[in-house]
Image (cartoon, rainbow, N blue to C red; front, side):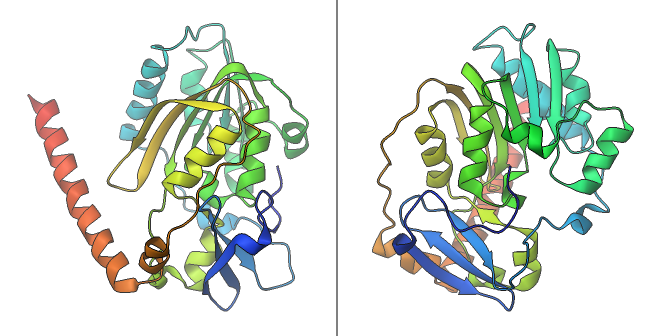
Length: 281
């Protein structure tokens, strides 16, 4: 898994649109796969900033309950007792501890040095970066949560990760997506935190070209998503996913993006309210 600064490796340079610039970074959008990502203007290795996690708290109780519910949902598609579970971005090992009770074997990988130390302190079984790059069809289940926005080289990282998945294995992906990119985000504090900002179409694009069939695909109002997919076959054809003229204009219009962002927040509050009413009955 490479975390150094690389150009977008899967699509042609000619298909890139520069959508913003800060003192230290340029942001691009790929017209083919819709990935938004940053390139450092400084001639240095662009790494994940470990310091941003120095005050990283424990996983919330709602996060733990959600993980248990996801595993329960997975049981609709396969028996899990004899499967090997891999957590990419395992943090302090909270989910691995839960998974140990449900799967035949579990192992994790954490790109952030600070969180990796916390995992090792809990005696969590961990891979190093070299081992991850050399794996091929090793695991039955791959789980990743809130990790990919911080990973350099989004496209190649997904490709390497899915290569670790056995045929007919399952990937569970819980993360953030970005439908719009307001210019107010274009400051160094934001750019130093995130490396890649995938849109809905980006996520589906890279899963499909890496042979993942979507079984569950849920995109929520709070800009998060849950995907459960099954590894079936590799589609060698590059998907055409051109960004329309209207979409380009929306992406670069601060007012429109701000209005859409505000409306999404309202919809999310309504959604959470309705969900709380439903489960309180």
